[in-house]
View 1 (tube, helix red, strand yellow):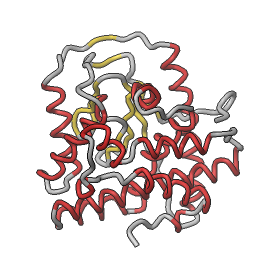
View 2 (cartoon, rainbow, N blue to C red):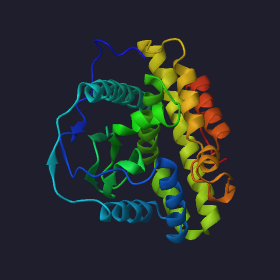
View 3 (cartoon, one colour):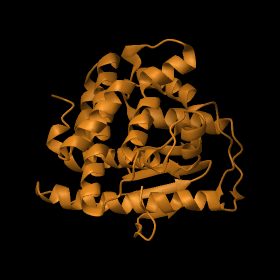
View 4 (tube, rainbow, N blue to C red):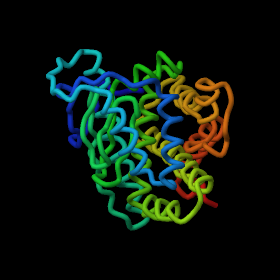
Length: 283
């Protein structure tokens, strides 16, 4: 992805140099499986998932504050994050204006280890997430390292896809989709709530694809292999792939993000169309 010399966003809260110094609790696959269990118990309440799992993780960690020195490695990630966020701001501001919607730019919080969020304690083991309460994206930059080293999803556009996916949840919030679906999840059973969660996540993948297409048309950001990097990342973090690695088998009714195939297909549908009208995963 071409980022050199390009403008970054001002809507970033950089908390990398401060935090609790907590260690990771388990791997992403294990945390996601724990999230599934909590999701069942909470009746499909994503806020309960975040608060429960993150607080449980924090109970295992020291709460003393530390000051960290930011590495050059982190600064390279930070530059990518800033440029991608700025591009999403430009794309969604222009795109949603066509539908008479004013896009409110979200904040993105970069951190290492642990930080606070409107949805509870943000802990690195959770991976990136969007909190609709404070309308911020929370991103522990260590996730990018794990994405490459543990899941084999290499390349800067794999990282860009992750950011664009979380921003996709903010777009859902702007469109009124996110609060509507969360209310629906409160009224249905656990399996149905999980199915609704999958539709939300696949739509965010599709929105990420729409962003990639429109940003390419405007800024010519893509280099050879970038879309393959995004598709590979989508595949590596599919529910079926994660569960198979973690426990050797899959439980489809517990899926909350979609299969590897579904995630690839919906990203690519968004990229091919460049239009959110083709991202209706609830149809």
